[in-house]
Amino acid sequence: MATNPLKKKFSIDEKTAVKLVTEMMAIPGKSCQEAKVVAFIQKKLKSAGVPSSAIKVDSAHKKSPYGGETGSLIVKLAGTEKGPRRLLMAHIDTVPLCVGCQPVRKGNLISSKDPKTALGGDDRAGASVVLNTILEIKKHKLNHPPLTLFWPVQEEIGLCGARYVSKGLLGNPKLCFNWDGSDPYSATIGATGDYAIDIQIEGIASHAGAFPEQGVSAISIASLAIADLVENGWHGLVVKGNNVGSSNIGVISGGDATNVVTPHVSLKAEARSHDPKFRKKIVTEIRKAFTQAAKKLKNHKGKTGKIAFVADLKYESFCLDPHCDAVKVAQAAVKSLGRKSQTHIANGGLDANWMTAHGFPTVTLGCGQAEIHTVKEVLHIDKFLDARRIGLSLATGGGTP
Image 1 (cartoon, helix red, strand yellow):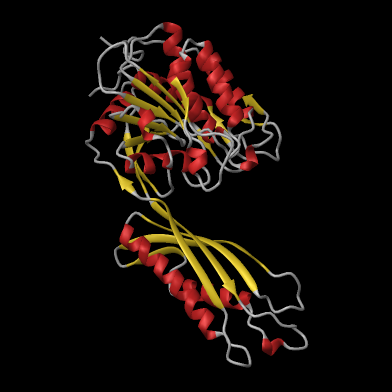
Image 2: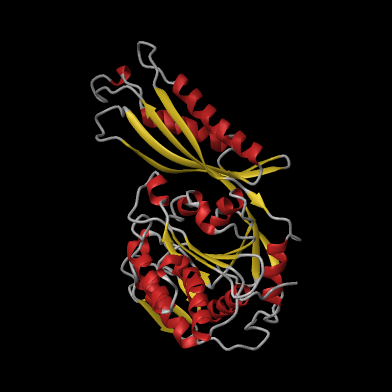
């Protein structure tokens, strides 16, 4: 029989759990620079008795368009008892705003001492849930089914660690759980899909004072296109009949001087929707707006600018059956804490998007994060500790409905 720590009222070491997550948040490790985090986790694993042969680092960074210091960390363990293999995962990179964080505890909250940095609870809290779980299992010699522990890199810049994971190292898990977010009692079973869009506008340079009529402003082309998208409801929240999505022009750069008709502007945008067909429609409308804007503006000789438009699917949307095994097991683990479990669909991307696309349906649970990606970020310790309890239950065969 599996030793389910929740059924046995097993008391986790709260002081050690808080110390570990605090240590992990203090390690600098923005996307593509996660090597120190990987080294920290490896050291903890080996000290706990996890054999080196079970610890692998994959080549996700070599496949990622962003490069990077290291691939994702994967641990595959045989079970001490039979059962379907379970996977526990959480990404280890943070946004750049977290570099230099000095975590401090005040009551039930952990925050950054430096008011200019974010905390990094996203997602070091999740990474700590997974690490703490295996450390507790080893320390107390708890029985468990076959386990895979997965710490992906580069989540914050497009889910690259999960996208480019060496799937063969995962051991074909049947029940997969990801920790990322706030509410440990809510099971996220679906998330939207997202296109990353790159738009390059080539205008025609000229002297803005002496010969403005000879130029075609790339800025003007961008302005006309964006105005068209806003006016026709294809920017921001996009609602067309029963179809819902969103789009955003998030980055614009170009121009060097006020006396030059701007010859080049670069834009980065996105288009999201849970419906793949409607998401493609949003992309099409964005492309059309910029193409038409480029044709509208002409210089004194009738010449126009031009655009280069590239849309890359960052991740596909997914929605798990609420009655599938992974969802039922996650909800049962939450209920064993005496908490009501709910399901949720996210409008942002998760590593679970790519895991599910790879054939590993993955439920995401929260771990106490709040105000992420801002200097106001905090970690709620009570929620984090409950996430730890749920993680330990799931890793030791608990949650079986």
